[in-house]
Length: 293
Image 1: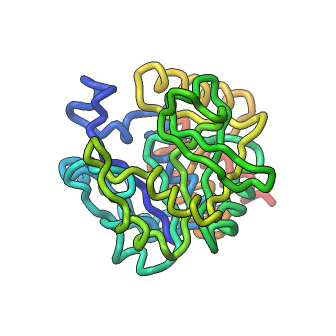
Image 2: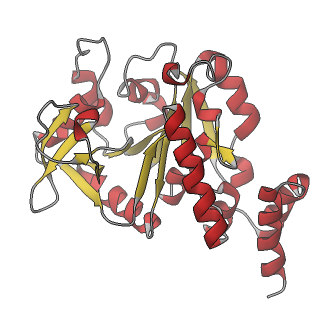
Image 3: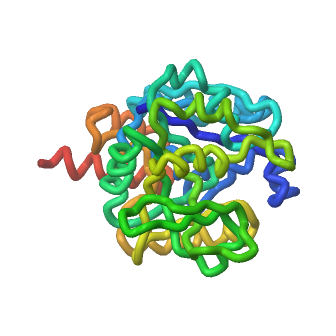
């Protein structure tokens, strides 16, 4: 399975912070926002990833992430000239997907919970013959895309920001699809706002009874860091968890090592140039602890 990271858009809700920089490069506590979305794909076991950005920001991402080889990834880049809908990402990445299954994660999604790697791997399994999305309980579902689920965990209705929601399950920006995704996107017509809506793509699978939902229950945290308030809340959450549990959330170097993509020597080489930062010292503590075994 291949992965797509969509980091386009203008970040208008965060102006003036985003006039000169992509919002997905803004910090969430101790690391760039894009690290959190990238880590979701890595934990799902995906190593071939296409990052779709605005043309003016692509060089900034290349400087930060490179080609991904330092983490054992194959990271490629593409441009989204204008924000014409989430589903447009599959058309941009058509050749990269090459008729196979893929996952798409929006660049401003932060997800945290016990057993995340296992949950993401269940999603990849479910999407082998359909699509898999997440469902997260929210207080005001009318602000989000909303999914209703039957007793088998299959979606039975979808609505985008409904005035009368049929459930309180919002759909985070994390999606898994089988090999038919590009064909289905080609059937989607632009909405009244001129975009290829992800909800319309998901309805193609729903109508076939093939849209599976992984419900995130108690103990999970999902944040859409698209406003100044949510940026602060996300940073405070990450800081609190990291300080109390003494591990980093969304650390690509650590994930890559734990998955066997890089060696302990590789990890040490990544940590050395940044050893004066708290992030670098964290990596060095991992190296030192394992070197003594």
